[in-house]
Length: 125
Image 1 (cartoon, rainbow, N blue to C red):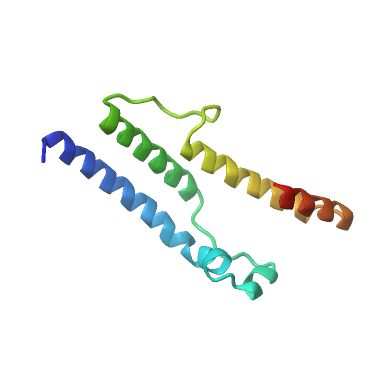
Image 2: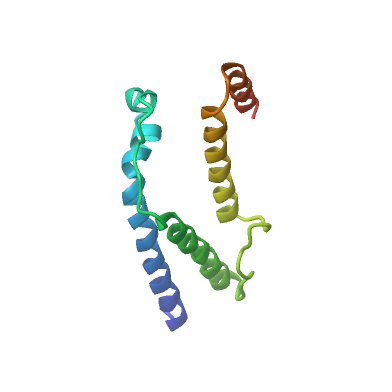
């Protein structure tokens, strides 16, 4: 394996460890909500899980770095750092999660009629 490939693999492995570490923090909540659809846990209104403050930022930084390294390895150059106005998989995921959090806040602070409207918007989307 050429030295450049070994270097890329080492960088990606290190970043993979960062993303897997974050996954360990959110797996319990993920399993309750998505994998097993634990209706009781979801309906209880209790938090499904948590992760240490700032760990999400570290995760997204690692994910962004993975994309940059992979692009450089495939195309010989970087597209540069992704910004919040630039489209991309990492930015798209991040914006989707931000919208989900905003929707949850709007839902929790809404009147019953507004909740129905918000749910109808969600169904249409």
